[in-house]
Length: 84
Image (cartoon, rainbow, N blue to C red):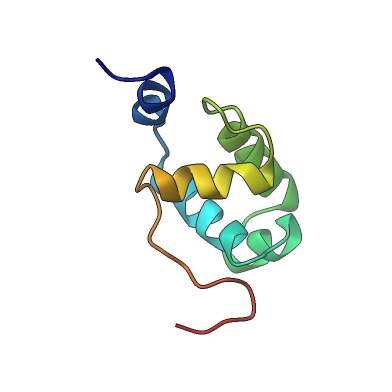
């Protein structure tokens, strides 16, 4: 039987756009930078982050990235300031 944490990770479903946004967050991007990079308004970037934080166990912006990486929802990304 799966643990509650494993079940929550399996329940996470991110859209392609949410994955793009979370990848940029993992690189250290702000909502303004995300908006500019993805040709959207800052409000849309913020709304998408709110949707991402609404996923099971994602308590904050910074907490959502490791959860997504742990759940294999994002490719491994270098730490901010590092190049792969």
